[in-house]
Image 1 (cartoon, rainbow, N blue to C red):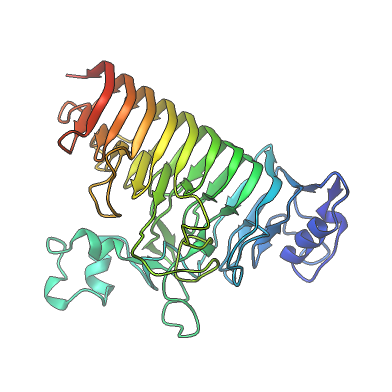
Image 2 (tube, rainbow, N blue to C red):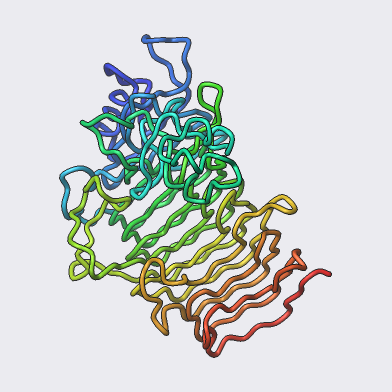
Length: 421
C-alpha cells in the first residue's frame, strides 16, 4: 500500500494520479487528509479533473474530503478505460473505492456545468419562482409571474459557469457524474458521503459483479450560490445503466434531487450513433447495441432509507429493453409529510423514453416498503411473474399500488398491502 502524501505534483489531482500510476503490486492507494507544502493549511483535496482508475486498483479514503474546484468540469473518479476520444471502452477488472471513517466527495462552489445532456446551462440559474420571474431570460415577459410558470420553466435549465462560453458545451454530460465506471467487472464502492453533486452521484455502465454500499447523499436540486438558490438538475443518487448485471446495492441513505436509485435500460434504436466519450450524452459509452448488451438483470437493492426532492426512491425504466431478476427489499421513504415529490417506486414508464415491451419487467420481488410520498408504487409499464408484499402506504389519498396500463400486471402476486386511513 502507498500513501498519496508521499508523492508530489503541481496540483492535487496530479499528486493523487501520480500515486495511482505508481501503485505497488497490491494495487492499494491510501488517501487521507491532505498534507502538502503547497497551501499546507488546506486539508481538503481540491480536484481540477477526474482521478482515473486503471484496473487492479483499490483506493482507500481515510477521513478525508475530495472537493471539485471551480475549474473542474469532470468526475471525482472515472474508470481509466473511458473518456473523451475513447469510442469503445474495453473491459477492465478489479476497481475498488473504499471509505474509512468520514469520507466526503463534494461538488464545486461554482460548478462549470450541472444536470444531464438535456439541460441547458445558465448562470445565474434561479430556482425560486420569484427569482425566475425576475431573472430568467428564457421565459417570455408575458409569462413572468409565479402563477404562469410551468414545470419546465424551472427544470429545463441548470446552473453552470460555462453558460455562454462558445468554446464549451452548453449542456450537461457524463463529466457531471461523481463516480463513473464503464465496462468494469469485479468492483466495489463503499462508505462515502456525496454532497452537492453536479449530476448523478454514481453511474455504472455495462458493469458486472460488484457492490455499491453504505453511500449517503446530500443533494436537493438546488444550491445557494452568491446569495441566491440556483437550480441544479438531475442529482440522482445511483444510476445503473444498460448492460449492468450481478450487482448489490445496499445501505443507502440521505437525500437526492432526482431518483435515489434508478435502473435505466434505455435503447433508442432510432437514434443516430453516438460514439463513446461524446459530449452529447450522459453515457460515456457508445450506443451501438450490436456491440453491447441492452438489458439490466440480477440486481439486489436493499436497506434504503432516503428521500428524493423531485422523483422516486427506486425507479426501473426499461425502454425497448428488459429488466429482470430484481430484488427490492427494505425501502423506507423518508420524504417529509405532504412533500410533493413523485413517489416511492416507479416501475416502467409512460412511453416518454421509448416503448415498454410486454415482458419488459419480469421476475421482480418487492418487499418491506414504507411509502411516504405523493404516490406509493406506480406500475407504468408491464410487469410479469413477480411479487409485491409487505407494503405500507402512508398517504391515504393514493392507492398503494397504481397500475397505469391495461394488462400492466401478469402473474403478479400481491399480499400484505396496507394504506393508512
